[in-house]
Image (cartoon, rainbow, N blue to C red; front, side, top):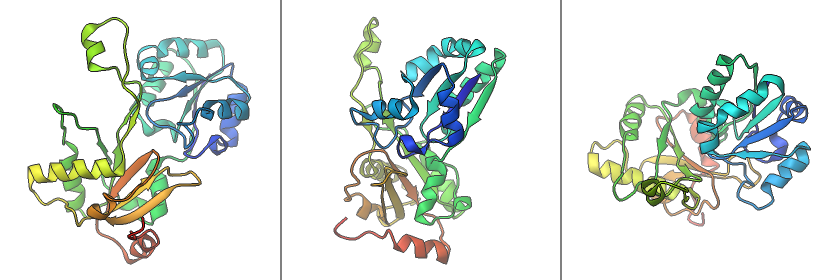
Length: 277
């Protein structure tokens, strides 16, 4: 059996009872470590906290392992119980859908244990979840690569009066351009996590390039940091206001606000930008 288990967003205690039972009876436990991280994921003792709480050693599974060497993990699940832990919900990243397809193709039983993810946790700000349009991803710009396909999606959402959830780039264990060119042993870039501030800077650059007035410095947004953790930060304000806010440690995400209902506006008031933010 291959168990694919959502861990939620906060810490090791956010796993469901069903998920914990599956971990405890598994012979091997892997943890996906590149599409997200728990609130303590940047700390030195983060993994050991998980291992102590779950009572199992945990094998970190980076992007290369999951996307290129997942076959070995799936084969282990033919005759053993194997747990694959995912921060948030198992289907928050397309790679995990691929894992299910590959496992079922080989006749391996798959059981999925769901949990909270950023896709529903953003509801805490008061914007109603059924009033969101298509979610977009904002990648880090480089000197030679400045993709902006998200712009048309935001434009469509805003034309319909819908909110837009922007998921911000995470770059963990990314090979350097030089090592890819040379071949041989890979060298990796330092981990990088996009901030709300960088996302807004890039969004405004793209708006300036296209000039369709889809959004601007006065557009209302909500910035989030460390959703689901005890020290989560939520601030509602204009793009210009949020660009100056120190949201602190990762992970961050951003919502571009569409048309609002009075009840939504009441909730947003609790998170309104103040000059001391």
